[in-house]
Amino acid sequence: MMNRETTLRKLGDGGVIAVIRAPEPARVRPLVEALLAGGVVGIEVTTSTPGAVGVVEQLAGALGDQICLGAGTILDAATAAAMIRAGARYIVSPILDEAIITVTRKLGALSVPAGYTPTEIFRAFSMGADVVKVFPATTLGPSYLRDLLAVMPWLKLIPTGGVEVKNTGDFIRAGAWAVGAGSALVGKAALAAGDYETIRRTAAEFVAAVQTARKK
Image (cartoon, rainbow, N blue to C red; front, side, top):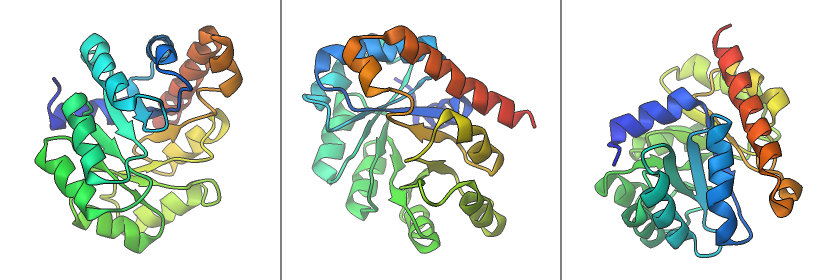
């Protein structure tokens, strides 16, 4: 199992975290394999996926050495603990909750809470967050990250919400540590149809956008 430092490095190097909301557990494994084939190693299984704890446990056993497996939409410390024990190496939350950060760090996983304002983001790091999910990033845009990093350059930020292939490069050039993508990466129609080739191609486009932006 990857330690905290390895997980942090691999997530950051990959630059893309796929936010998975699958309608049924059976779709998750082929979906993750398609994402991995496209170069996306950051996998976040949200609690809206039925049987999410079991899904994380199965993925950890089958693909844990190949992916950076995390759990998302975590709203309480008990669920965070259950996900970590199932094999999640990082915990992503849409809120800022100190109890979730504390139990996540205690159990050896990375803490990725959400923040929106400069104060929330700073507080998250003060509480022990490893990275902060800037959510929702839909109306903020890349310039918001650039402004934050101008005064707090040590921040590690993951914009999530409204991130698409076409603006991924803009977020990375603005200083994003990585990006989080849900429906723009894993389209509902493609997932429903079992069109994993489209998902693989989209994953590759996201990865290429990150890599191109980092070279400039």
